Structures are given as C-alpha cells and as structure tokens.
Length: 235
Image (cartoon, rainbow, N blue to C red):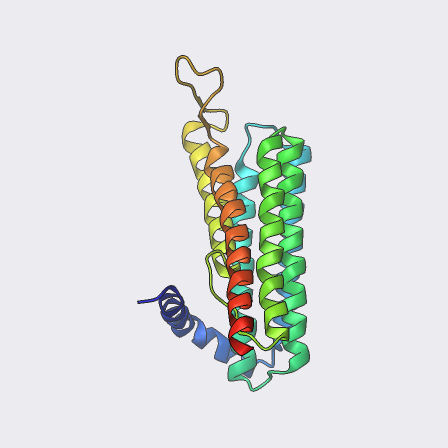
C-alpha cells in the first residue's frame, strides 16, 4: 500500500470518529471560517505559552513545553473540523479554501515563533536554528504544493505534510513535559571521554524538531522534482 493510500485510509478512520461532532457543529450553524479562525487563535495561544515559559520559567522547568504541546494537539483538531464542516454542511467555497490555507500558514508561523523564542531564551541556540530550518521547510512544503496546483499539477506527496508536522510537534512536546516530571528537567546524560552531554531532557522535544527540519526540506525538494517531471511529461 502506498504512502498516500495509507494516509488517506488513516484520515478516513479519523473522520469517522469526528463526524458526529461535525454534524453537531453544522446543526448549530457553526461556519468553517469560524472554526479556522478559532484554530489560529489557539495557535497564537501556543506561542503565548512558549513565550511565558521563556520569560517566567527556568531552563529546568519544561512544564510549559508540555502544556504547549497539548494545546498544539487541540488546535490541530480544528484543522480537520473546518474542512469536514464545509463538506458535510455544503459550505465549501473558493474563498473558504483560500482562507483556510492562509490561516494555516499563520498558525504554523505563530507556533514556530513561540518555539524559537523559548529555545533562544533558554540558550538552546543550536536547537533554535533547527527549529527555524523546520519552519523554512514547512513553508516550502506548502508553497511547492500551492505553486504546483497553480500550474495544474496535483502535488501532495512526501513526508511531513501539515498533519504529520502538527502531530510530531505536539506529541514530542507533551512527551518532553512528561519526561521532565519523571526524571527532572535538568537531566543530562554524559559519556566518559566525550566533552559534552549526549542527551538531556529537552532532547525529547528538540530531536524530533531536528528530524522535522530535515524531512520537511526533503519533502519540499521531492515535490519540486515531482512537479518538474509532471511538467516535462506535459510537453
């Protein structure tokens, strides 16, 4: 089974769970644009949690990271709800699709703003660099798809699409907060002969962000190459 087929099957299973909620929202008269806007506001809240954690918390207090992760996961639910409400409630529109895409980009930018602010404030400079690279990759994944579709090419392949990015960021942040409550936020693993620690509690969050930095840019490049192949085939 291809990656796209597996992803579509998983998406259908998730929709089967949330569809009762969707029908309730449609009956209540909730619009897709309202849901999209709520998702943006929640992601602004994510940035605020990270910024407050940077200003009020200390380096060993990773509870803010955990709570931010929970809020990222909750906000991600709205990414699925708005599209389903539009489809089931017959409220789809071209502007609604544009509005959803634009606010999704803003949501992701605000989320990474909070992450980078937190990492810089607590002197995780290398990790903040990878977070910024992950942001670049995330934007380019979306841009290459949008630009390809503008040229009449469907381009949805590759790893680290928005749902995967949201889940990876949220789960790693939550896991970081939980790990800190078990082993402490200041835990460091050192190996004799190596002049620096090879692991610390914050690594539970920063290692997945580093992986995302690599995979998002690989995804963007793959989409670029797929688009080139499709354009060449049209000639």
